Image (tube, rainbow, N blue to C red; front, side):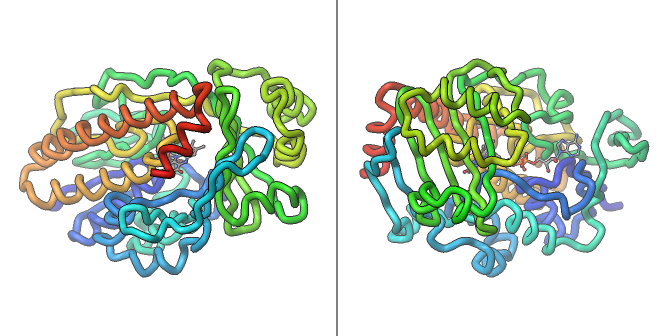
Length: 372
Ligand SMILES: Cc1cc2nc3c(=O)[nH]c(=O)nc-3n(C[C@H](O)[C@H](O)[C@H](O)COP(=O)(O)OP(=O)(O)OC[C@H]3O[C@@H](n4cnc5c(N)ncnc54)[C@H](O)[C@@H]3O)c2cc1C
């Protein structure tokens, strides 16, 4: 009898795994809490790396679909000081394979993965509430009252994973930086100055131990996120424009007033994201019928641009381990051992990067990193 596999979470990691497992003929269902695929996928654009995100898409047979959907030119990067002086810029990351980091918006990435799955693979409106061991597998209970059974569960349910507690007692720690994230529609007309600076790509603005990252998106909007050491819960309220603007103007005092246009024009509410990280040296004893991937396994701040790439590489390595081992327990042990080591090294580098970008020399650090 075939192993029934349940993936909790239809983010990039969970959907990539579903695709790779279906290519192997596995019986797999993705349970996703979003009500439908029409729910707008928010967030900054993602740059995929040749040895992780792009590799997973290639093995999944989705390179052509990716090439139809990525945004050429969106990797144009400018580093600015807080007065909006351009300190460094680079529009040609395509020179060498290692430096090739094409950008794709989250929505199109999700769509191309969804379109690659057998119809009905994703069960929407399935917010996992609890898991109980049953008959050697798991009974899953969802917020809408439905239940399901699986022999093997993969927690791909992101930063606040419910599945994580069944695999490890280790919890994420606060990494010292809190993000305030927002989006501005039709940036060409609403904030033409920043739109022009963006040049269809990304801005990294650094100074005073703070960061502001702005990304253009294919639908004409832009997404921005500030990063600073304000504690886990900076004052809001974040659905109140005056309060949000007052917070920005006092926290980013002395910055070019043009940056405040982001807060004056952003859709409300803004999103507050205290940045947590799983310890780089985490370890646990693998279980035979449940595992984790992506942010659920190794949450880290976004300052090295590795999160989605690691999630998709996890999916590839887990699918390969399940194909190589006839015993799922051996496959999980093999996958988790490699995944923890790899993700630990990336998490260490990411924490160093997070600290360096929010240090007094953040600007010089980034420029010297990218110049070399
Ligand atoms: C501001 C910001 C900028 C970022 N920029 C980058 C970047 O440039 N490059 C990069 O590589 N990474 C970036 N990241 C990180 C990246 O977004 C994540 O690492 C990546 O999305 C992880 O993928 P995932 O599939 O593991 O989890 P997620 O993308 O979080 O997906 C989890 C899915 O599970 C669903 N879910 C959650 N709980 C449940 C539940 N109980 N039941 C059912 N479904 C559930 C969610 O709805 C979601 O669809 C950024 C993150 C942030 C916050």
